[in-house]
Image (cartoon, rainbow, N blue to C red; front, top):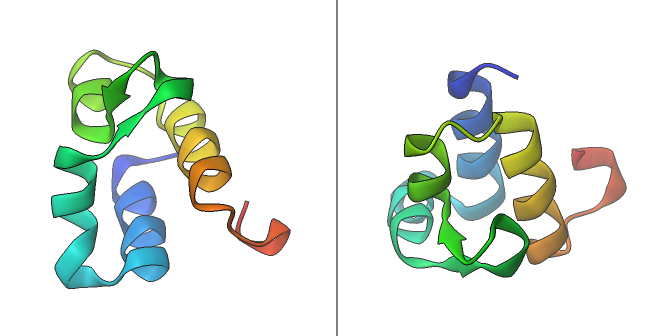
Length: 64
């Protein structure tokens, strides 16, 4: 998944005004205790990050 696709999905799920803030502040256990931005900076595949976000936010299956 391209990074731009990831951000589009996150903004759709959380809203454009909140997605980047959430990504910077919210720690996800499935990402090894990292925030989304930390995971991106450390080179974790965006597909894996999205799966963790999807599970954390309990998004509908159609949004996978």
